[in-house]
Image (cartoon, rainbow, N blue to C red):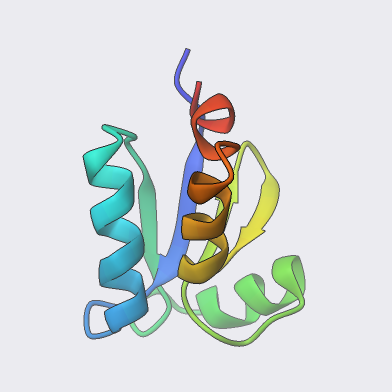
Amino acid sequence: MAARIIMYGTDWCGYCARARRLLDVKGAPYEEIDVDVVAGARQEMQAKSGRSTIPQIFINDQHIGGADDLYALDAEGRLDPLLK
């Protein structure tokens, strides 16, 4: 069963685009919540992550962090096991 991935972001954010690219390359389906469009989404993201920057990524309800954190996990070989 594939991991449940939720990414809070926007369509104009470069870091969000980087995170999308990596997840797409991995073939990992994700749900994206646009904090500029969905009412209350930014506040929900901040409450869940403790951060105000985007993107904020969650895999199976575990807070991963932003795009740099996602790429760091991949570089360490720890992303693929989370995606399975």
